Length: 116
Image 1 (cartoon, rainbow, N blue to C red):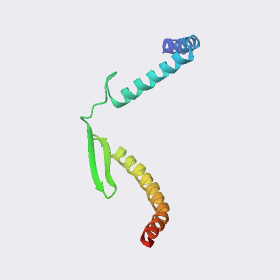
Image 2 (image 1 turned 120 degrees about the vertical axis):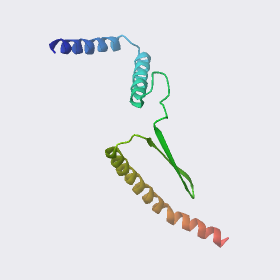
Image 3 (image 1 turned 135 degrees about the horizontal axis):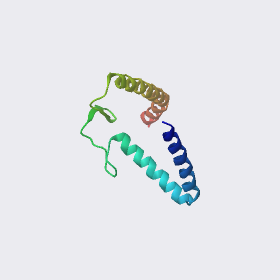
Image 4 (image 1 turned 60 degrees about the vertical axis):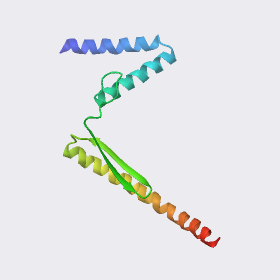
C-alpha cells in the first residue's frame, strides 16, 4: 500500500516535469488527446474507433415543426431513466417559456400580414 503512494507521487512529479519541457502547442495537443481518449473510454469505444451503436435505441416523434429524436442506451437502469426524465422536464420547461415569449411576436407578425 505504501509503495503505491510513492509511485503516485513520482508519477505526478514526472508529469509536471514533462509539461515544463513541452511547448504550449505540444501541451495543448497532449491535452486534446487525453480528452479524446477519456471520451472514447466513457463511450466504450476502442481507441481510434467510433462508439458502438448496437446498444443504443432511438425513438423519433413527428411534430409540426419537424421531428424530435431521442437516443438512449437500451440497457438504461430505472434510476438513470428517472434522471433523464428530470432533465427532460427541465428542458421542456425552458422550451415552453421560450415559445410563450415568442407568441406575441408571432401574433403581431400574423396581424401585419392579414392587414396587407
